[in-house]
Image (cartoon, rainbow, N blue to C red):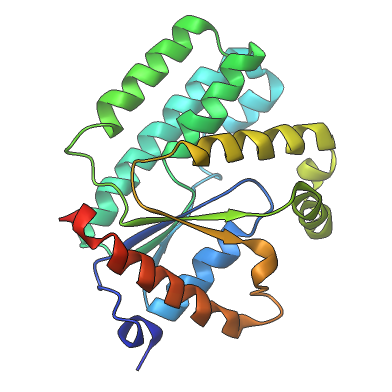
Length: 222
């Protein structure tokens, strides 16, 4: 008996993993998908035609980049539900507008007209009764010092060149965002309560908590 059957998690369930850079979203996505025998949905970065341009000129390309991400995530969300669910998704569609587009607007790298157009588009596409929201959003969180430590440990070149002030601001924005998030049920997991890289068996306690949360909130999904 696999963990999905053991903890009575419906085979059509869709779970989204959210959290700031460095909290282990990809690791959690893979571990949960393996434990539950679900498929994975990862962000397609390599095929993004705006990413390189964006890093060269934030102000010129931030709107284009965010609209592209929104369209791709919307299509992926539809695909997941048309397939019949049974997916673990790395990063949610909600973070694009709640974190990244808003940060560009606040910092002046997206002008007010573009930001209004983007948020209107997001609301028309996502904040409707017809949009298929996940059954659960698993939010990974931890103290900022631990998050920065993980970013430094994994050693990605672009991240190493980013000042810590950026990660601190991102961490604060994520905390503010999740505290006001209500598009679907949320399970918050502290990254210091488990270590999936050193102890893969810790995934079972996480599956147990997910099962409990899904049962508690099942009336919201009917």
